[in-house]
Amino acid sequence: VGAIPTGTSKDEKMTKAKNNIWLLALHNFFVDFSPYMPVAIIYFATITGSFALGMTVFSIAMVSSAIFEVPTGVLSDFVGRKKTFLLGSIASFLGVTCYALGGSFWLLAVGSVFDGLAYSLYSGNNNAFLHETLREDGRTKEYAHLLGRTNALCQAGLGTSAVLGSIIAFFFPLRALFLIGVIPRIGCIVVSLFLREPTVHEKELTGNVFSHLKDALMEFRRNTKLRTLSVASIINFGVSEASYRFSPTFFATLWPVWAMGLARVISNITGFLGFWFAGPVIRRFKELKSLVLGKLFGSGISLCAMLFPTVLSPLLDSCASLTFGLQCTAENSLLQAEFSHRQRATMGSLNQFAGSILFGIVAVALGTIADWIGPTRALIIAECIILANIFLYWRLFRHEEIRSNHP
Image (cartoon, rainbow, N blue to C red; front, side):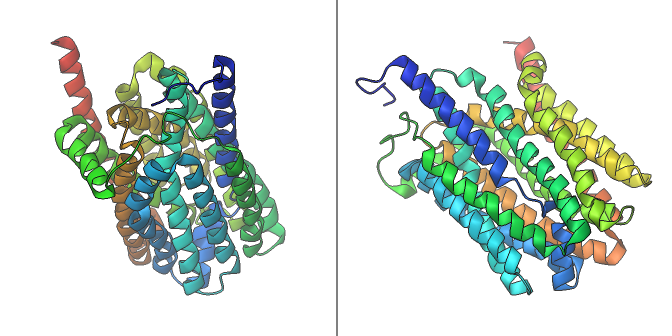
């Protein structure tokens, strides 16, 4: 499996890899070109009437993502990465369309189900697609570097759309941001059609779906390092993502609604830089050290911004994203190194399944706590949990350090 097909030159193979990487980066830009993102919680809360119900829309998306997560991971391993990309793009288009039409909680909920389906189709599939494209070309050592570069385009999409969103929100209702957000989702569908399936994956999997899933679960049971990394990444995703989606409510206590996009622009610029330079930083300091130091810096900056709120706090909190790309790249690189080739997308989806369930719980809890004691205090509690989670990475870091000193 993975041999170059007859008549395929090395140059043609390299061209295929470059095209896949370029198209993946373009897809990342389109899928995160979301001018509505900085004000989504405000839009949802306005329609539903409370922070708790507004965050419930996000929660439904993540819970539905969790429900679909494992089946879509197995689907990707069996039917291929390209088809899974296309299905995810269609689901994303339907989700944003429902948000744009949403005049009630229930239509928003339908949109969030499609949104969750799209997320689950992308989560394990996209990283596996990049890893296998590089594996086919004998370049797996470049995975962290190219993962950072392609994911930097997500931040570029978010930042560009946030600027556009701020301008539109100043003149038009918030619904207009969602209507414009439908257009790049069509771009995702078009890009998906031009991707090429990595040959190292083609026809690699046969047999029973349930035995495939069982083998993936057994890998978690056997591999202590994988379990520790997975638990830490699950907690980090569930709490951090819910906090990020809810943070505009804190910004809104200091800035007008139309300016929310400006804070996100700073966040996306620093996030872009974090992803873009993640590869060189990781080569210098290694994955675990980069991950731990990045978490300490990011959480420390965010806590300072919220504990001592001023008109500059949204800008300060946005600067915490400087290490976000570094953290994501380092964490994913560590996980991919532990995943088995045959269950790569499935194992990624299992992690995402648990993270999505946790997000659903934390999102509703954040909204409920904010209704009781205010959004700022709710976000401070979430950030303290993220900071405490660093202990798991630190334990793993210490274990690796001991092993390197005593081979």
